[in-house]
Image 1 (cartoon, helix red, strand yellow):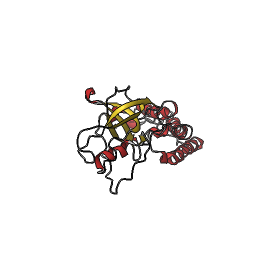
Image 2: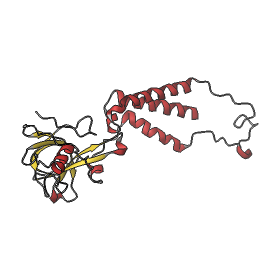
Image 3: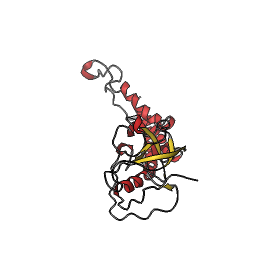
Image 4: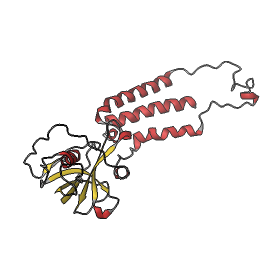
Length: 253
């Protein structure tokens, strides 16, 4: 039975990794896109190890060893065989089977609402001029940098459009957050970037939307005192992107 469990865990684990990384985009719920080749290689290695373990002949036990006839009496002579798989070990199959039949959802508003927004990097060089497009497609990170660091205040009065998912604010009267979750390697190191949306009712939490509006917040635009907020004039539901763990430009028609 112990041998069966070892082989089963190896083969099912490998098949689960291959299914998730080769035939679906579900692996993007856990790691960055660049990790895909490593997941495929790991899946192949686990399957090979499982097949090799199943193919290998079981070790021969010498006569008189515990568990053979009446000659062996086991530990302290009681005749008990402790070589079986503990019941709790069968729980190891649950995460393995989940890779094949049920993938946990990606991180969303529950995670984002319980942590502060990520501090965006400081723009060392001067900001490039903004395109004349209106509304201007922009990422949440770029919008945050423009609001708090661009001393030319080029974002003032500009209509922008951003894409993210809905995260409720602690106090609903303050509005709600347009959010993106970003990972450096995997979901374990995830952090969020948020823009406060005001002036329009919040859709259901975790709904992916395009929000169009202009900067409207307290503080001095172009300095760290400026609130990263948007006076929204339109919200459009969009399909969740396959790679949700990145701050990408919105897809606009």
